[in-house]
Image (cartoon, rainbow, N blue to C red; front, side, top):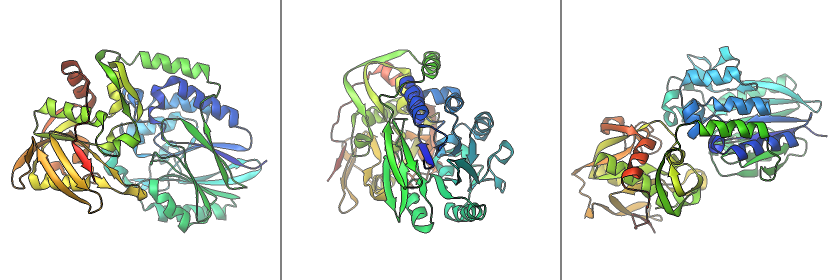
Amino acid sequence: MSPRLLHYSDLEGVYDAPDRLARLAGRLRERRGDDALVVGTGDNTAPGVLPLVKKGRQAVEFFEAVRPDAETFGNHDFDYGLDATLGIVRDSPQRWLSANVRDDGSVFGEEAGVVPSTTLAADGATVGLVGLTDPATKEMSPRANGLSFADPLAAAGRELDRLRDAGADHLVVLSHLGGADDDLARRFDVDAILGGHVHVPRIERVAGTVCTRPGPNGERLIEVDLDSGTATAHSVDGATPDADLRARFERHRSATGLSEVVARVETPIRRTRDLRRNGECRVGNFVADAYRWATDADCALHNSGGLRDGPPLEGEVTVADLVSVVPFDEPVAVAAVTGEDLRSLFGEAYRAPHGDPNWNAHVSGAAVVYDTAAREVVELTVDGLPVSDGATYRLATNAYLLQASHEFPTLRPAHRVETHGVQYEVLADYARAVGVAPECEGRVVLR
């Protein structure tokens, strides 16, 4: 035998799908053995409908069921505040690793048992593990803004040296850095970099190092053989479910109080990455329309990453279904922006993170034509009229975008003029009053 790693990450919405959660637990049980370590790489407590209701604590029940060996933090693991995060750390069975997250100069959660790195035994070998989190977490999760984040490459180098000195047979990084995993692989001689954050599944070699990502929502786990350096993805479909875990989460779901039916959808509304990242889509139009309706704004904008993947909206749509679209407790806000600001915002909407060009803006009340080759806005209208650079427009958006400068740097806290209800509550009010029947109308044209 050879030491193996069973890798999960970005579980997020799996807690709202009890059968899939139970099958993930079943697949882990099936693949586990004395030669295997079970590890997570962040965003395994939030977001989602049940995470929003339980403030992330539903994850403790999953952790107790599968008994992971090690875990690191993702940006969403701070969504409900530092005290909530520390409570989860204290009550869950795995060792939490964090080499670059700091609280007043010390390792965040040190008093709760968090350490920068550790060694664990598997199949007679010593496996050294380091945990890293994206420094942009301070912007992505405002409730983490009391923390500081050291340079992840420097932190990794320090801890890897310690692990080598301790005699580790294998070196592994548990990373919630996304695209920066490749920088780690090129910089350090390690056996594996188990990643998360970016939701595109991955098994690749970079500079001789196996780099993996399972993708979101508990649909698969990845198994890495450390001696051979090979990795295999295992779907949870067909796994024997953990019946007790499934029953408990079905009870949790029914007890959320979010089962009110607020509308009926005749034509299913798909919500997948390929749709929300490639221009206009129906679910994006629905959300943006709801924000503009609730605020009486001139136009509205919602970021693609703030829309979560999941099953289509179809048939009877409940409040819980709408929470799953935007499972965050930030409010809708109105920003006063100039026409020049709007033009800049839509210029920032087309990005190429990690070599994957995509569109990041869903709109209402506005229409934009964007030239992807020239990387510029060609046409921009609000209410059918060309945007005037000197005019002021009321823009409805989620409050997160006014704080997270990495998404739309043009938007700043100073632009805020009003605050309205929590995002999913606005969607529910709109669904009750107007319905849920969005169509694509040429609001975003990429050419």
